[in-house]
Image (cartoon, rainbow, N blue to C red; front, side, top):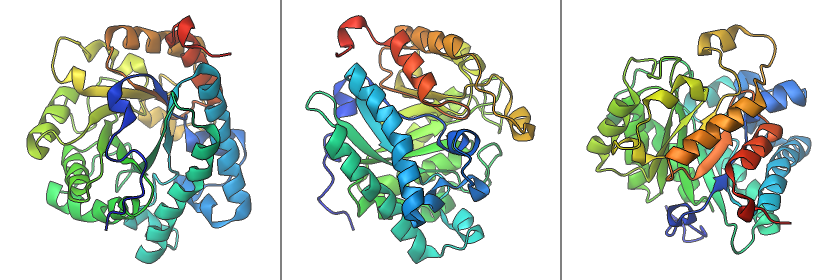
Amino acid sequence: MEQEIAKYRHDLPLLRGGTFLSDGGMETALIFHEGVELPHFASFVLLSSADGRRQLLRYYTRYLEIARRHGTGFVLDTATWRANADWGEKLGYDAEALDQVNRDAVYLLTDLRAEYERPQAPIVLNGVIGPRGDGYKAGRMTAEEAEVYHAAQVAAFASSEADMVTAVTLTNVDEAIGVARAARSHGMPCAISFTVETDGRLVTGRSLQQAIETVDAETGGYPYYYMINCAHPSHFESSLDQRQAWVRRIGGIRANASTKSHAELDESETLDIGDMTDLALRYRSLTGRMPQLRVLGGCCGTDHRHIAAICEACLPPAALSA
């Protein structure tokens, strides 16, 4: 049941304009830079110990400090990309434990918001929903099955202080439809983020245009905006023509650092942090031609250094604060 405790759920500041940062590749940064063990790439397991929670807080703080220096808002994501039933079962979490994990993940962020939020730089608490399966492979659920499957995680966020939910690294249009419908049923603002292959298409072969237009058609345009994550800008930037209505529905980018394909990244034993300067300049190009872009963050291989470089490239000097 929805609780009237969320600060921005009924008035999302992202919809009023301005730039909002987000974090980078949480799992890759924790594993490769911090030496943290994350079974099945699940960062939510860190919530179960005091040391794990401290690691997450240190991780978030690096990004919040960047946002403070630049005077931007922030979309503060929960560490719950894997906190759904199938992945939870592999990690020994039943439905009740997962419900608690998802609510705890939001609770962890509330003190950070209290510390870092400023009147002109709001911080949105965002409940992250990941795909039921592997983020690089096509899912096989119908929209109806996806709505039922993801409803438990959406419900947990609805009963917390989360302002919105975002489904990330989605490859299947039907799964995106199901998440959006579940969010609508629980009164949660929702964003949908697709990932694409090096040809700019979903692994199913659908184009971003087909994906966004289909989800909008099947949900009455419920997602507040769409995003692209877990792909390098060189994989999708050429397909984004701002004159087309579907492109204007894209409100955020969380790109990979590496230009490698998903298959290559899966096989790699080292972290490819890419070319930070080139990545930042690609973000500047995208924001220059897509003024509706509000959320700027990173995905696999990126860390706080990439986000800082993106800020320097994309934010006008007048936006910087001392």
